[in-house]
Image (cartoon, rainbow, N blue to C red; front, side, top):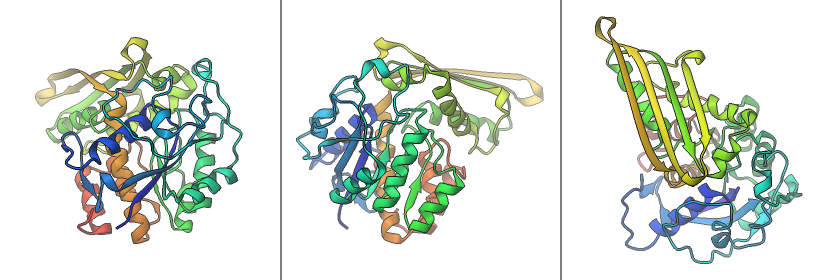
Length: 356
């Protein structure tokens, strides 16, 4: 079936875990423990190839991707040795990709234009472009989406910027015959997934939820970036949708949902989440749930990205264009058309057949 040629925008912790994951699970005889789908859409992890990468940190640009994933300020856990990939990190587009809370941590340079990025994608044979830009980078995200259109690439928007939820972008990808997946990646086993599962279970058992919060703490650049209230706002919106929008009980009013993020440097790439739910059970009696969970933030995201790029490769083969709704609902916090997991899997099977 060929390979899944992947380009990366933003060589941060998530990119590091994704690249390591391909090296780890793509090795012959690798133990599949921790991997959601060893084979997805007919492709194994070993079929995934990195063909291009873009960043604006001068400490990463010009270096091989296998080296750049370890460059500061990245602090993701090292769980695999990555051999040289022959993929130099190319200087990308700066725009709004660096916020004021993180600007002092990197030497940022990014003069590339959309045509240059598109040409790089074409020259490297990239088929799927994955957006790992920081929260609060809508202009830069749209430039890379534009480059993907020009180059004929599928686009996976792992960040809260509105792309898949935009009727304009959805229609442009549909007309171009290219798949689009977004917005804002779910972790494989993160706070949103656990929160969503609790909400759904309560709703199916007759509990009426009154209010809920999710407080996340971490020490990576994503959390430092979210100390800017303007940048945090888009994350709060997609988190709230991801917690309740696709459950059987429906979404809560915005005033009843709170999402917070705190930067704690010594946590590095670990995320510590606190979740609380309050509701009314039988006879109107009160019910309260409190939960604390700790997970390595970036590796928890990599498994879902591996599925997203392989589904996009299948979509390119099958002529599926525009927003790939069931994949977005399965893997993203803020899908344009939220649905339950069972409904998304059933629709995916109908669209793609048993290979999915």
